[in-house]
Length: 253
Image (cartoon, rainbow, N blue to C red; front, side):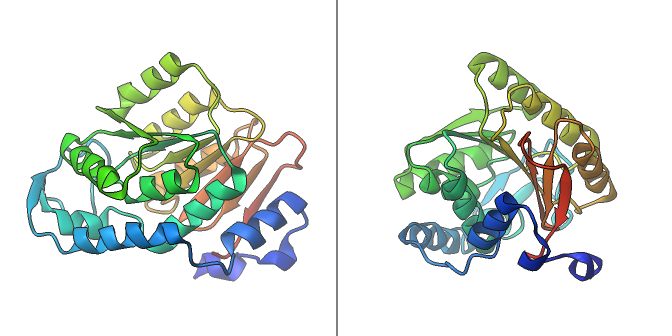
């Protein structure tokens, strides 16, 4: 409620870059794409599944299910971002046209699929700590006919900096949805920061999920390399555009 009361809309935006982002991506009235149908059909299939897998959770864990043995349906329901956010990531990716997308936290791969479908010529890399969920995600990519996703299995604390070092290229879009704790989130931010450029965007999930995540978000916003942040309550966008005046936008989504 506090966020809604202080959040602005298009009339509160004086930056042409953020205004275009808000009207074409954040509050776009476009809700349909042929790419969405297959992903959402797959979501329904996953929600209905009652088979179980063993979860290796290396982050803050789930607040809804503390067991390490969970049904695929419960994972699809609790760990995957709802379709509304998938459509947003799709529009954001199409709008920014990145050559590469890096995702920390694959889960069952539904969000990954939105990124991959939005940028079929981009290289999409998804890092996941749980081998069983990653196995299912790879099956889901195959079912959807998605072939531009490369996965990395293992503890993201180690695999992410190693991946960035070995690849040694600039990053265009990074989605942080792995460890919902302050120190790892800020550390991943600094790892990726070494490879950012003027048009890079970092997307942080669940910035108000806990006091730790909110503290991490405040630390990230204050970094001197960050020029523009967009607070959508559930998601935070971080830009490094040197031509932009430094400003934090709190907007309705």
